[in-house]
Length: 72
Image (cartoon, rainbow, N blue to C red):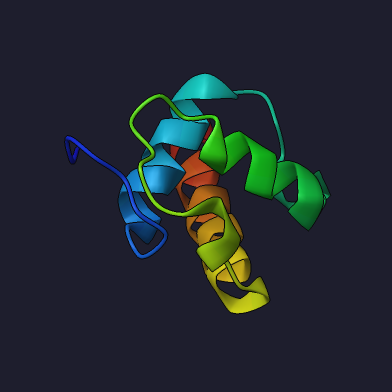
């Protein structure tokens, strides 16, 4: 995993979120909460205001894929 996370580090953010919230179904997370979860990750260093709906959606889908993989 990267030493620092930015909005475009979709896969690394997904791994970090799955580690932090292993039981959380990512598809049940509102974008406002997802934004907070990402920006509260200890190694997240990007500008919180630089997120977009598209970036959050990409993170949510990557998180869902990682979460599904770990459930199997």
